[in-house]
Image 1 (cartoon, one colour):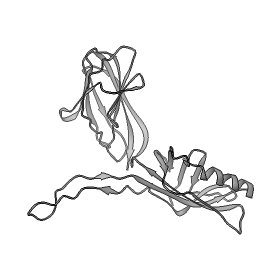
Image 2 (image 1 turned 30 degrees about the horizontal axis):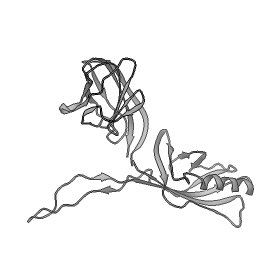
Image 3 (image 1 turned 180 degrees about the vertical axis):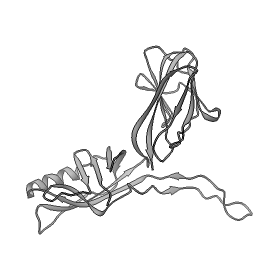
Image 4 (image 1 turned 45 degrees about the vertical axis):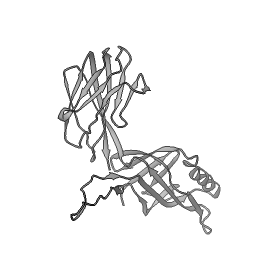
Length: 259
């Protein structure tokens, strides 16, 4: 079994159990959806008057994570308190950050509650209970450490990379002044064009993950002339030509991204 530690709010789930300790301990087969990937969805479109179908690309579905095992406490009262805390996880319908530690790798994903949480006490042992909980991650990717690059001035080149296993979306921070906006150039002639003026002392953030522009931390509706984005492949440096326009600098961050 992998040495696994998961944390959501005040609750920690572990695979490793030390005799005499209390907590939530996963069964040997009590975690699913972490080491495996997500389902693939694609549209099948038959070729007219021919064998087979068009080779259309696919997209990953939500990631479903299921956890089950045994909760152990020092007393029946402590077990009851553990149960109340456990059944309250994401019960308001919101989302939370699930942190995943496996060996030396630390990952995270945002999840919501997918089904009814179960916490069933053992009639023979009042200090133990069986538990089961299921989450859904709308974004099936798992994220790790941040890689930072720059800042560099206009005319310079940033070379981006990350140590994950899946293409990642970069995030750019732009500082300086450019009354006519600026252009972030990428591989194969791709361009992300911002028409919103850049004012000294008020940074812009361009997030390729959602194609949004933030000015001084506030999302701006509009202000983008061309929202063409690109991804940073795992392990392979992606050259990004920085800003053209004004007297600006650009920095980038890329999360190690896994699937």
